[in-house]
Image 1 (cartoon, helix red, strand yellow):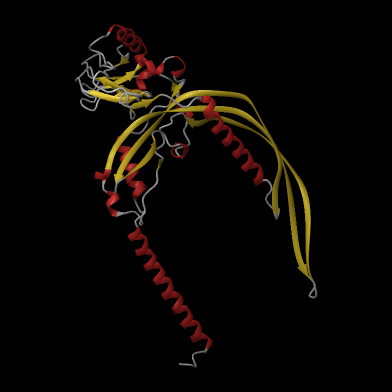
Image 2 (cartoon, rainbow, N blue to C red):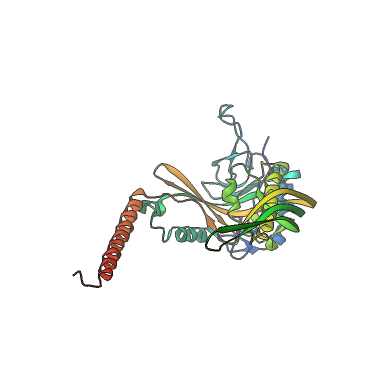
Length: 370
């Protein structure tokens, strides 16, 4: 059965349209026509209707030439523009043909519960991602020199990552045991006085749109590190914003993701409350009560640039917030550089320490021992 896909074509010249993060318009790279995403709502409806009638000239799923175990979780599409084959897993929602760069959107990935409530459009482009990566490497003295070569960059991809956004009101009450100690002496005896306290703390907090990624493919810690996002710039979902980018639908259900959100709610409130106990010599939590109300969740696609760097047989993944430009990712350590700086600064420290000992000896002798 043919897959139903949407292809945004320029009404003027027929070329594939792309969302431009700089102008926040959907543009044609060939004839320079531009359209607001809002203006393409009717065009989007037309494409959906037109996709129902397409057969052989649409992107179709072709698995006849593959063994059953090879196509498990794998879809093979044929590009309507050039005939090239594109492979994607079951969560792929939009893609670009690697042969002609044509953009298509898998309509079935945005039906029913899979339709996002919101999309946060890209504000930064590929060049911004490359520049952010250069800055991330700058000044890292323990980084292997060979790693800095841009020839190691295997892929730079703009991807809309599926996120669940959780909002809630939290009420918490905590009881701590605290103590304060003071010490003094009268010359003959040393004294220590310890006072113990029952500390009661309570707080109400509102969390708005705490994001939790809904993709098994994404590293949770990496995605968490991209925060914050400015959700004031989020808009109602429209497929036009996906043109020119990859996107995935969620494969981690909200009921599972909410447990991660609850853990973050609890930790945030707990950290804030324990800050109110400053001034005590020791503090130990005895009991805690936490309740949530006015729970609300939304499904959103958030902009992320992924950079894959292959070096020394290992793949390093970096992610950049496509709205703010914040880039995160772990860097390799050069053992050669590490020992070089350790010996350099260690030797310098020893030299300075030796000089201080000599100077102290000289001053202690008052100069007379020379």
